[in-house]
Length: 383
Ligand code: PLP
Image 1 (cartoon, helix red, strand yellow):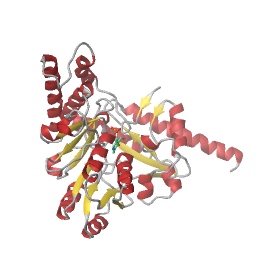
Image 2 (tube, helix red, strand yellow):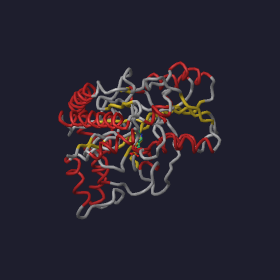
Image 3 (cartoon, rainbow, N blue to C red):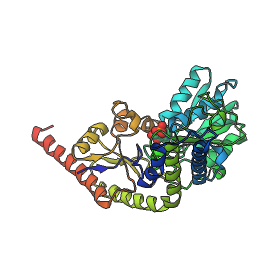
Image 4 (cartoon, helix red, strand yellow):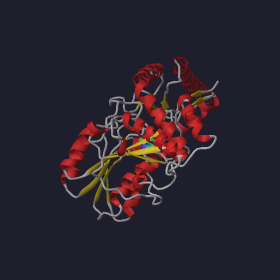
């Protein structure tokens, strides 16, 4: 048995995206910067993909800057706005992914005053605390994610962007987990910058995009041949970008159905584990991504449970894939006010289009079996 329930870590490449990529991986094809027919064909394919990615988030193609993934786009947003500008205050959500926290910490070492927006126990940013932080003045940039990779909790980024603008700040939104799972409208959201990553929406790994409002001034991270309007030098990963474009197009037309399917499986799994002793569902009171279920079972370590499920052929995660195996408690759950032991107990199950009801039932049955056998062992040794 082999069941993949870790779609928030990465999702399988859609066969239709792979088919679109194929011609750009094989045979002769050109560099999009070349003027001959091969180059012109490559350039045309690049621009089709740009339009497809823009359409997914209701942006203009000229607002899309392709990058080598979500982490690079987050770095470009934060460092691109801040480096080169006189240092000021930088507000970053306490629940953000390390792709945002990393560049924010690097900027703090360069003199930026980094402050974290607190969250409540359901994994939502504290709007009042955020408002007070903005009122103190001097904020240059806010970075807040749309949906959390661990809990799936969704933030009111539209409101956060309006407040940031009223205080004279820009807002960057990491929408890596939201894209393909929620309807996304860059213009309506009001963010100045927004990060996307192809492999979270059944595209290839190693490709992403920064969507930007054209009034934002960015300093590139990679200088070179002037590609991506001078914002990201280097010959484009054309096959990857074409796959991203096709995956974005499919996500736009199919995400409602995909998420209805994922929600049914998530709710089935949530109902299936309901009787487990000491169960706590994280962010249960918040609006959450339809495919995501994060929970803990009192007294059990999340990473140990991941390995026990892995022995039974079921792949889940203990939190963010980037921190798995670190032994550290989830910073997301500690920011939500949980103690280290509770945070270390977290297990994340994230469904995708290829999963079935049997998959949801299998993870519930396996968890019951693990917890049940543990109970017998505890009784046998008289703990
Ligand atoms: N932001 C969030 C919220 C993520 O979940 C991830 C990946 O897990 C990233 C950024 C990084 O994206 P990538 O893996 O494309 O670098």
